[in-house]
Every structure is written in structure tokens, then in C-alpha cells.
Image 1 (spheres, rainbow, N blue to C red):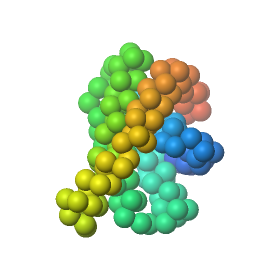
Image 2 (tube, rainbow, N blue to C red):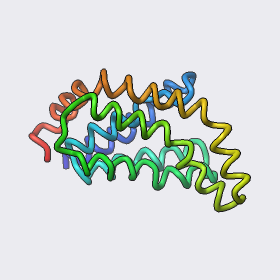
Image 3 (tube, one colour):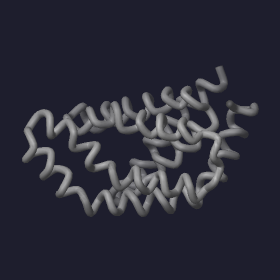
Length: 162
């Protein structure tokens, strides 16, 4: 029961922190929260991701952009699960940076399907500066916050995860 509450709070916290940092385009702590949560909770982190994705849709609308959130954030959970035993901060910072750099291309998929190659390509191309900011922001956030966030999650959940 406590674990589900922590996962729900993680999803809401990801949403709130992203909203609070909205002035900084594509610089937010969502990736570091998902990586830390997945390292600690494993597949159960998908509950927090679901809360986050639903809050995004409820507050900002369920537009075509939202469809990409249904697979992008769970994809980060899957990637993290493949290397879950790794604790090297630099490794996770690089993973988060590459994910941030690829974010726009992953978001372009619904536009590609609904509008064709021109729509998908132009959507991706116009977002490259934001993807670069996302890459740098993810790298820095994970490098600085991952160890601290892992300790906070462990303390909040009240037990040794995994």
C-alpha cells in the first residue's frame, strides 16, 4: 500500500516539477525520476509513469502530441530495466542524454503516421534545438540528482526496494 502511494506521488511530482520548470524548454527532471524509480521499483515504476502521462493529458489536453507519451516514457522504463543493475552515474547520465536527443524523433512518429513524411520530418527538424537542450538538461540532472533521488525514494518507501 505504501509503495503504491509513493509511486503515485512520484508520478505527480514529475508532473509538478516539469510544470514548475516550464520556463526552461525541455529541461526538466522527468528522465532522472523515471531512471531512479525504475532502478528502485523495477517494472512497478510504470504506475508512476501512468500517473504522469495522465496528468499531462488532463491538464494540457489529449492532443496528437500526447500519443507519443504513451510509448516514450514507458520506453525509458524498458531501457532502464535492461541496465538496472548498473549504478554508475555517468552511464545513466549518458543514457538520459541520448534519450533526450532522440526525444523529438520519437515524438514525431504520430505526426509521421497522421500527416506523412513531410509532417513527421518537419516536426522533428523544427524541434532539434529543443532536443539538444533536453540532452544537456537530462545529462546534468542525472549526473547531479540520481544518487540523491535514489536515497530519497528508498527513505520514502520505507524498505529496501527491488
